[in-house]
Image: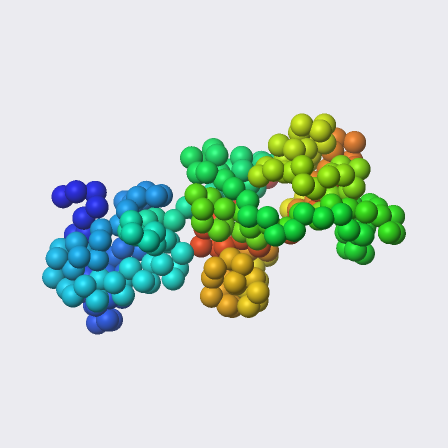
Length: 246
């Protein structure tokens, strides 16, 4: 049996609608690694022939995977397994570095790059005085052209005096200018996407997303970055290794 086939049989045999049974089988295959990232799923026609169901049923099954973010549709090409990032919490790395290490192509869709007056939270987080100027970078982060996160980064003016000079990788820019962070504090919590955030991330309103706040510091202790990231929970896993104390 080819890698792109789906086994018919007893696994698709409960009392729920047939398309849901097929969807669960496909989801299990995705999550157990039978299908790899960027691999094409069987076509609706192939599924319908293999499982002896209508193409409408096969299409509804695939729709379930698309709604969960496990599969993306590419017009004229087919249905493909969506990217997923497994990020160790012990490493300080950029979004671009994480994707490149896993073979994805990172990119940014810029929404705002501007010099503004720091807000109260930004002053406190970055240790700035009132009326200090900061660079505010607002963008969508993409992997292989798929939106993974909406991100707002705020940095002191002396660190980023020209926001337009920042390319796809903020950390590469900071390294080139001798301001690469040495450590960071990161807080993660779940939240439900507002209508506007859902539109940015291309998810359903109210869907759970991961809200991450990071403050990064130089070796000297100077804070150089405050970033709020809103990550699609269907594309992100955060992994922490823990050891039992003596």
